[in-house]
Image 1 (tube, rainbow, N blue to C red):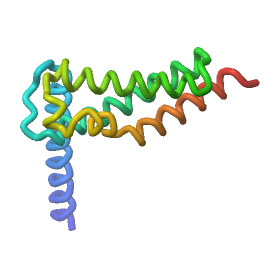
Image 2: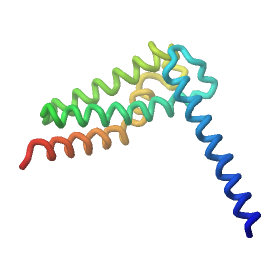
Image 3: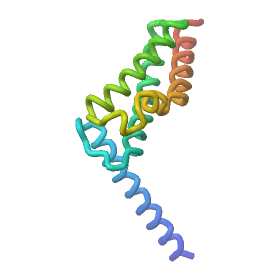
Length: 131
């Protein structure tokens, strides 16, 4: 029984180490302009999580300003789409057609990022502007 627990612990540490190395590798590629992306899904994953982070930041900012209404939603969509396109085509220097074109990049992670934006925006706005 002691031996199986040691094997399990070693296996978990090996998996954790692999995940850590993979995340560090992707993060370092994401922060360096013009990185090589042999697996396009890795770049799309970076775009997805970047869009999540941007949605959270914009939602918190819009909640504190306070920006509200249709204008806030339209501005979020414009900023999120523009930042994603700029990051992919200008910063990473990847042809958007190789990833499926403009609309595929615009749609990548949009639904879940929009939900993150709405929850953070409404939560911060409600917490900071209502007694």
